[in-house]
Image (tube, rainbow, N blue to C red; front, side, top):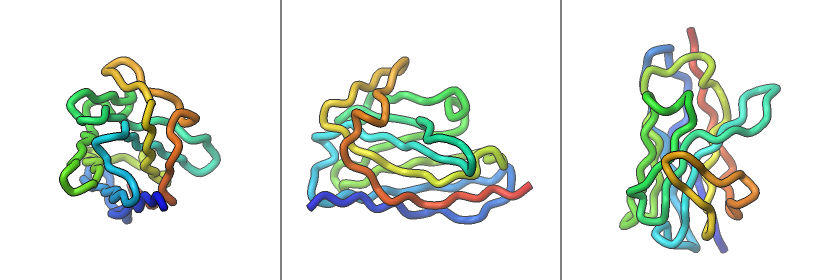
Length: 128
């Protein structure tokens, strides 16, 4: 059974930092491209950041480009998202996802349909 479990979401003040974790079981992270998506209240799911199988090539959405860092610790089977300079606009449920054949380049990340495994999400709330 494949399982992705996110953790680390909490209430933080604007300007603060937060690190989210996604621990995988039933699959090896080194065999999957990984991604973070988020869904804010009243909005659809959107890409945050993605990483290739090895994790050396990464994609960032515009809003995350200079503030967020995605990293894969394949030895620990854990995906991380470091978030800095948080704003209330970052308030959302954050999901990690795995895709065996998802394309990731610095310019492009595959859509959510290309990620076949998903976690349940962790809530991030940024207060002003």
